[in-house]
Amino acid sequence: MIVMKFGGTSVGNAARIEGVASLIISRLKEKPVVVVSAVTKVTDLLVQAGQEALHGESYQKTVEKIKTLHQEILSSLKIEIPEAESFYGKLLDTCAEIAQKKELSARSEDLIVSFGERFSCRILAEVIRKKGTPAKAFDAWDVGFVTTDDFTQAKLLPAAEKEVKRKITGLDVVPVITGFIGKTSIGEITTLGRGGSDLSASLIGAAIDAKAIEIWTDVPGIMTADPRLIPTARSLPSVTFQEAAELSVFGAKVLHPKTIEPAMKKNIPVLVKNTFEPTHPGTVILAEAKEASGIKAVTVKKKITSINIYSTGMLEAPGFLSRVFGILQNHGMSVDVVATSEVNISLTLDNTENLEAARKELALFSEISVQTDRAIVCLVGEELKFTPGIAGRVFGLLGKAGINIEMISQGASQINLTFVVGSADAKKAVEILHAEFFERGRKSM
Ligand code: ADP
Ligand code: ASP
Ligand code: MG
Picture 1 (spheres, helix red, strand yellow):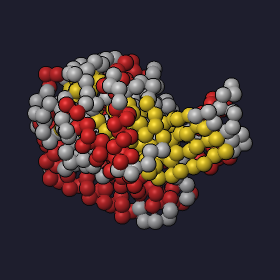
Picture 2 (cartoon, rainbow, N blue to C red; picture 1 turned 120 degrees about the vertical axis):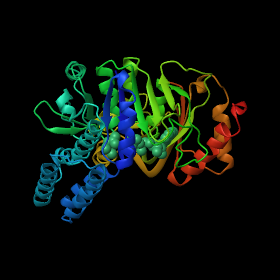
Picture 3 (cartoon, rainbow, N blue to C red; picture 1 turned 135 degrees about the vertical axis):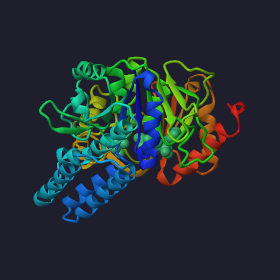
Picture 4 (cartoon, helix red, strand yellow; picture 1 turned 180 degrees about the horizontal axis):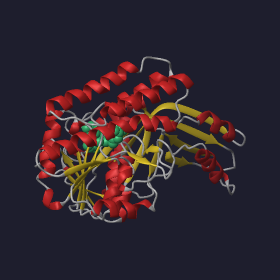
């Protein structure tokens, strides 16, 4: 069996959905298990509807937009979804309840956004069926995808894996499963976090011991940089699990940051392929590098906040760091980059919802300063372990360009070189590094 996951743009209109259905049918011998995201823009619109309901604005118009978007697809494909009316009804009722209570819980947010994938999987399954191949749409929970109740950030329960395997391997049709969503053991709808369909695909792939997990998207694999930022970025034939994990954590949106872990545990290759150019080899992600390893990519992650915690003499005191991390953890804040000195610890955070509360607790035993509007820039590649002088080259170039570097960290894995800059400098930093490491040829390594 193979897992084939299709992202939102891959199923963005009727013609694309037809193309995806044919692609799946061309792989029947490999027993494809399909995972699909919501039609492009639909999740954003669902989030918007929830926000509008919360703020007493007209969410009905947004729901109408979602309806039109799906309706156009359904009519050009000449198909229908029997559940459509009940889905819209439930969506409108949920929004009305939010508007009335003036409260949007994470639980209701997950319920609202779940409709995107529930529509798209039914559309795709119907198109495959219309082409003469037996296929069936499944909400993830119908194939045993039971999660924790961490709404908006749920995790698959380890005990669910066996059930997922049992349910999927017993099927004699092509399953088309919702990405992104699941249900708790008491039947409440959850999501794995934005972009989570990649993670659904990899969790399902690991559960069924798939031969490969294919992530079909709108670019030809993992590239040396985000092609939207750097038009000259090129696609990488292969990267290691470690490299892919670092790339996605530090901003390469092409994979959800948690996608790699389940695949790596079972040593299942992950392929990143372009739906619009299926013959392009894309990128294969494996345990070991297939070719001479170089520096693979430069990534950027924006909207970052950094905090500096200053505590004279305390840093070496037993328990200081664990106290700091304990407070951040209790407030649900995850840390990306850490740098310490004798008297300082600097951290970056990408979620600052509870920053004020955490700040108060930290201020009980240290001085805190906060800087918003930062960006993390990261160079990734196994080669960084073995090549001396790269840091000198990087910071020399950026210094020459007048870019101020605020924190530097070489991850414990030693395959990334990460630093923080002001958001306004991020694009320039990425352009300079891309030109230096990827546009002057490998000889410059
Ligand atoms: P999907 O809807 O298929 O899940 P996403 O939009 O989530 O697709 O991810 C694909 C996008 O990731 C690309 O269009 C590209 O702009 C962005 N991206 C960011 N960094 C990279 C990178 N290093 N390589 C490839 N794509 C990248
Ligand atoms: N539809 C969800 C989102 O837009 C999940 C995904 O596309 O992976 O975040
Ligand atoms: Mg995605």
